[in-house]
Image (tube, rainbow, N blue to C red; front, top):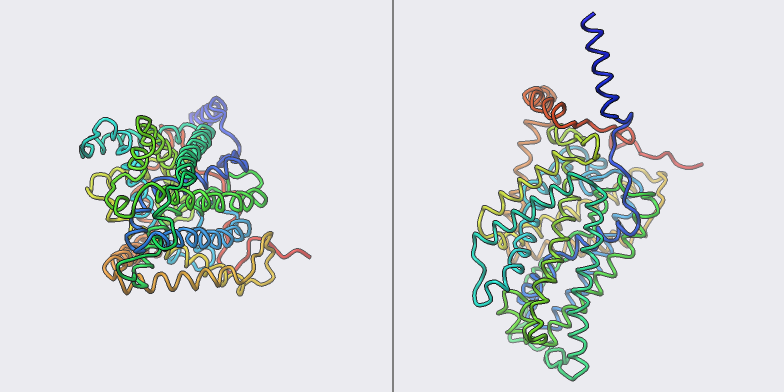
Length: 503
């Protein structure tokens, strides 16, 4: 009798909470929000940090501009490959989901491990520090902002945006829309002022004789490092693939958003660098710790305060975009069984992956406490490029393994082949010129192998691990109304296609 009353009570409680029959992530991302996610994630802190590194390794203004244009072209080739993968394997999780589906659990786990452990927390930390530095720059005009002040402001920003993302997908995407428009306006201001300066005849650094003059011809390895610096500024072009399941009509809107966003960013980046070089000599740019602020001080005079505010708006939107997408990577990894299942839970009312968001927030704050994070950019860029290449190689393997599989989008084989050729050259020369940087990046990835073998691959140990976490998983389920989501479709083994060939 007591059991019957308990069952009735539980059913009544469920009705009171209005628990939906199927708990899934909501499809609330249209084509506009999809474009702002890509543009907002690409345009973060990179365009305000990387010009210095690209110029330093390129050796001249002209070569630096060529690196920026080619960097955008390579990102466009990669995005075409990801568009095909995104509509063929319509799962959130991006690189991780595709590699796991095609190459199996170990390779997929290594991609997930490196991303969760170092790649995205470090990138978030760098963007947050850039945000706080530019916000505090007007307060400390004669010196660098204090170390503690930048860390505290960065932490406050990350905590606030984590709360927003936990509360509502709609508000998170609205913030992304607004701040993406804001950062485009900020870069538009830089471009307009720079082009006006050029029209007045001030373009000494851009004349062919000066642009390609250099004290010493850079080595191929140095050019490779310049591309790695540019790749940091372009990182994020694949982030819409992390939230595929939340995109409205992904087979149509995902490729459209990619085709629009990447060329727009490439054009904006190239024009922004031209604007920088119109007002600053290479020596001035290399000596500047805040390129946009130096640009504003030289050309805007009393209105130069606009530049740090504009950069702060840009990086604020970048933090929001990275939190939104990286949390979906943790969510996808937990749903596949590669991370604790607690991270695959979503809130019943808000339909947001709160545990995954909290983990991303905590990991970023740990990186903030480490100290100097800018030295990690090369490590992150190397790991980024490595995962891109593995994913594009997976596309070619999947074409060979499943030639009759229906693909809504099918790019020319020249696209992935050209991308992989450039990828191999870049990583090869990077290994030769900076073996320590690349070695540390590889070591970070390979530390995931014993973790996978001990905690994920062996079923008995994996079950023991889950039982140990059981009480902690059950508690937030009851206290914070979290729920394991329904999968939108059955997850198959790598050799079984998602779609059957059309007759």
